[in-house]
Length: 399
Image (cartoon, rainbow, N blue to C red; front, side, top):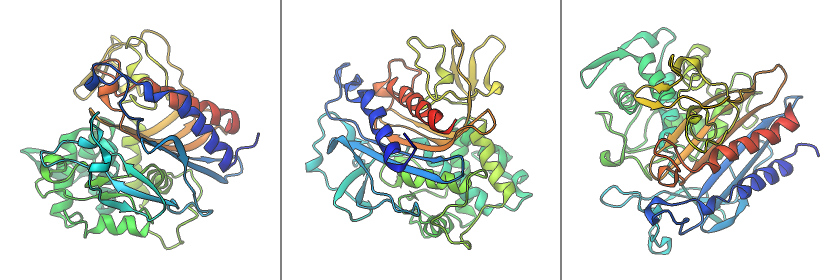
C-alpha cells in the first residue's frame, strides 16, 4: 500500500487506538483509569524518496473519543475545519481542565484560532514551548552573538549555553534567562506585539503563541503566562520544524520571501535538539533502566549523558543504567515537554542509514506524570509504544 495522506492518517489513528490510552491509570483517581477519554493532538509529515511530502493530523478528546482526522490543505498550510480553544487555568493557577471531575460544559473557553465546526481544546505544550523561545533568540542573534554574555539571577553565561541547556535538558532557569533577554531586547512582550509573534504570522503558524511572559523572565502560571497563555498545536509545530529542518524540501505554503534563519543560528537551535538529554516521551532510551520499560522511537542515545557506571545524568535528572540493549536506528532531534498533567514531544527523525526514513512528528497530550507507572517516567508506557508504532510504519514505507 503506497504512502499517501489517507494511509498515513489511517496508520496514526490505528496506532493511537492500539495503545488503549483511555485505560491509563490516573494517580488522582487512586490508580483507576481516566474518568474521561484523553486529549491527544498528533501530527506527522513524512518525506518520500522523491522528496515529496505527505502529512496527517489526528486528534482525540472527550469530545472526540474515536478520533478526528483533520483536513489539511494541499500546500500544507494551516489546518482547516477546526476551532481550537485555549487550555484553561483557574484563578489559583491550576490546570483545572484536566481534573477528573471537571465539567467542560461549565467552563468558559478562550478561542485560540480557527472557526471550523469541530472544536478541540489544545493542551498546554509544556516544555515544548521552549522551542518558541529558542527560535525567538536565534532570530535576534548575529552570527557571532552566541558567545555574548547574559546575566540572570546573578549567573552570567553565554547565550548559546543558556539556549543549549534550555533545549537539551529542558532547564527552566535557562528558559527564564532567555525570556528576560528577549524582553530586554524588545523582541518579546506580554501582549504579543513583538518580533516573535510577527514571525509566527509571517510563517502562517497561527496557533503558536507565547503570551504573558515577563521582563524578569517569568513564563509560568504564577507569572500570568503558562497554561492557556502559551499554546502550540501539533500541525503548526511540525510545520515549524519543517522550516527549521535543513534536509527538508522548501515549505510549500511559504512564499520565497518568507523569513529564514541564517544557517549559523539555525544550527545553534538544532544542536540543542540533536543532543537531547531526555528521551522520555515518544522515544524512551533515557528510561531503559526502569521496570517494565517500553521502547519508543529507536533513537540513538547521546553518549554525553551516560556516566561510566551506565547511569543517565542530564543536568540534575538522574536515571538508572539500562538493563538491556536499546535499538538505535534513527537520529531524533527533538524537544520534550513533561508535567503532572501534560506530556509532549516534537522533533525531526532521520534514519542513521543513508537513504532511510525522514519525517517530522509532534504530539501534545494531557497524559503527564500522574499517569506514569514510575516516578521517573513522563507518562504512560503507551506514549513510547505509540512512537515505536509510528516509526515502524514509516520505516516500512520510507526505509
